[in-house]
Amino acid sequence: MTIQTIPTQPFNDQRPGTSGLRKKVSVFQQPHYLENFVQAVFDVLPDRAGQTLVLGGDGRFHNRAAVHTILRMAAANGFGKVLVGRKGLLSTPALSAVIRKHGCFGGIILSASHNPGGPDGDFGIKYNIANGGPAPEKVTEAIFARTRVIDEYRILSAETTIDLDTLGIQTLGDMVLEVIDPVADYAELMEQLFDFDAIRAWFAAGGRMRFDAMNAVGGPYAHALLEGQLGAPAGTVINGEPLEDFGGHHPDPNPAHATELIALMSGQHAADFGAASDGDADRNMILGRHFIVTPSDSLAILAANATRIPAFRDGLRGIARSMPTSCAADAVAAALGIPCHETPTGWKFFGNLLDAGKVSLCGEESYGTGSDHIREKDGLWAVLFWLNLLAVSGQSVAALVRAHWARFGRHYYSRHDWEGIPSAQADALMAALRAQLPTLGGRDCGAGLCIEQADDFAYNDPVDGSLSTRQGVRLIFTNGSRIIFRLSGTGTEGATLRVYLERFEPDSRQHELPAQQALAELIRIAEDIAAIRAHCGMQAPSVIT
Ligand code: G6P
Ligand code: ZN
Image (cartoon, rainbow, N blue to C red; front, side, top):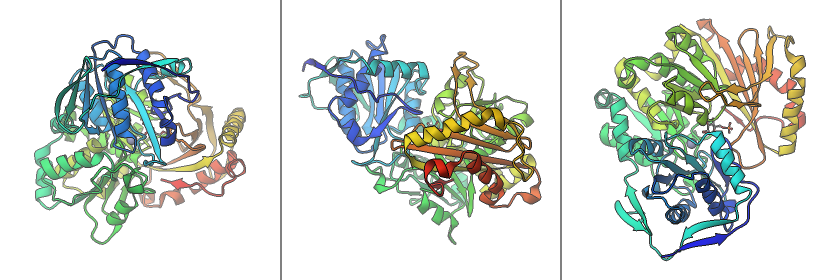
């Protein structure tokens, strides 16, 4: 077994996006492509010698091959130990939990999250730091800078066999490799946070649930926790077997992609509670019987009811939401007398706030919710939180949501995605919007909607003082309504324009409108001001959630 130094040349497209480096599988399959990126990660970690790394992925196509390569590179780059999930699997939240529990140096997650998988699908890689969270921008930028000049990488010669299927310790060169149960540490943590007895009693009393794991990595976790420890009947978890191509589906838990679950939960025999998680199990969707909960509402409702679960008996320190997420959480924070921080899109922006003890709960409109228990969003955690609330309140999902609206008002919310726009056209749209900003403040758009503030969101991190600019164009209206425009940072084909629409309605007699109807005027204004059809050459958004 020898350490080889392989000459290479830089690729110019290895800048990590909102959440790591994501590309088509075929891009990652190019000779040296993965290796260059991994070596760039290792190169920006000068104190890695002898340290312990965690490694795992969502099981998508190319996961196993990449795990083998990364293990051989870690051994050749002086790591002391790597903990790898059995079969190369670890959900994103479980990886974060493992880093924290075992005090590891960092971790590598192989996932393209909710993007489709398979040979023609997407693959991705992300580095997480010792707090268990995604590397901050200064690290990802340093990685990118390194990829631009890299000229060699180190890897152990290929003759060693690596067994990813048997739990326990092996050696790889001078490095120790431990194959761990991907579920155990995570399940232990969940048991500390929630009232498992109450949830068991809810299932025992006949509470019915459907959890759609979307043939992604959440399946083993949901089987073990829901049907195992919590006593839910077999069959509660559907699509629970991780598949390399997610069964050909888009493993994204939203009404547009989780169609099987939506159909089950709107049918005659709908369960009481429905939920789903995405490719790497960090996202969640929450449904009641014939009822869909928006992620922004979910965050606010969890915050308002936090003291009803064991983890938050003593209350919340603060809440954080990404800028495009609705202001429903702000209303709860105001009532609780705690701060609500507004950050750019990307879970990594919550890390500093969590580490500094400024917030306990975080959430994003993109179906992400989480807390200070780890440094990633956590799909199954959110589902267990809801289950715990159902169990201790004895109420249905819909009743909890309606009571919340009655108390705090309803923030109608929707996101319109215009996908697959040629990048140049999407950039032109955003540039034109930004150019208009100075003239938009004060504009009367009709229907009682007057723009109070028009800007490009910038975030000054209160913990490390870093400034992130150009994080999305905001139109904020005098009645609190908001329209936000930004380009997705996670796509791999062309550009996706996201238009976020929000309207506050305090009057409970107006709380049962279909969201698209309640937001119709804002939709018109958004499409008009941004001249979306003209720029994109499309007639309608491709996904509405
Ligand atoms: C990932 C990130 C989230 C982010 C989401 C949407 O899931 O972890 O933090 O909100 O992508 O990002 P995008 O740039 O595509 O809107
Ligand atoms: Zn994800």
